[in-house]
Amino acid sequence: MLQLFQKKQVDTSLCAISEDERGVSMVCVDTVLSGDRPVVLNWSRVERQNDEEAVLGKVVRKMQLEDRRCSYLLPLNKYQVVITSKPEVPENELEMAICWQAKDLIDIPIEEAVVDLFTFPDAENIPGEIRHSVYVVAAQRESVSQVAEELFANGIELEAIDIVEMAQRNLASLLADQQEGVALLSINPGNCVITLSKEGDLYVTRKIEVNESSLKRVGLADAELERISLEVQRSLDYYATNLKQTQLKNLYVVPTPQLNQSIVDYLDENLSVKVAVMDLNELIIWGAVPEKKMWGYLSFCLGAALRDWVGT
Image (cartoon, rainbow, N blue to C red):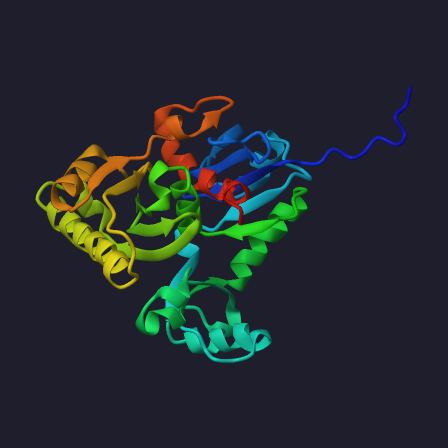
């Protein structure tokens, strides 16, 4: 018998797509089945062949993402995050005022940028001028439009565009000590990203420029690692002292392709906190468990796919 009045099945999952120089990753998280641990329904990784560019369409077709709820994670080199004071203007004028106030802080001409912002959580309890500050995210409008148009041409209307800092915040929400606060560090091509968050709110984010080749060379690596550890310690102290939060005891390192154990060991020896790599196998229920070497390509994408699970 034909079910003429069958209701359309509601998609309870969110699929996040991310790109890097080597390829495209996709992680799909179910937002209903997920309880204490999120459930990853499926994931995929497609490597670029001979510098090809049209890889997004391959992932969409391979994983049958047409008409699915999807988000896209902007690569780190496609946007900037800066901090500025929040102008005292009516709410409907805030975005325009923020744009012009931040124009001297970003590399993108403001008329060519798409801008978003997020505020400090619990701002009324933060002392001094910090309570009046906001984080501003700026990306090249043309680059964002190109991605949205390419995915739309392949049957996807993006539900959200995310950034690595928010993906790390989402990953932090998986950890048991998130009620006191979680510090996460990722080692990426040309930079590191440190985030400090608590109960789903992002308090501190900082990008640390690094010389990736130096990290791989004997004699030069220690100088780079010393600088990274110094910036991380400054961020930890800022969180506790300036933002009046609990002094953190742990730093978790996100698995990325650039990470190696010597970096973890150095940080563990030179920071005031215990340092460990996030174990995504323990924190996630995987439909098909990826090999450990694949985690580095999936971690940020997983974080982006967790936005519903975190509640944002």
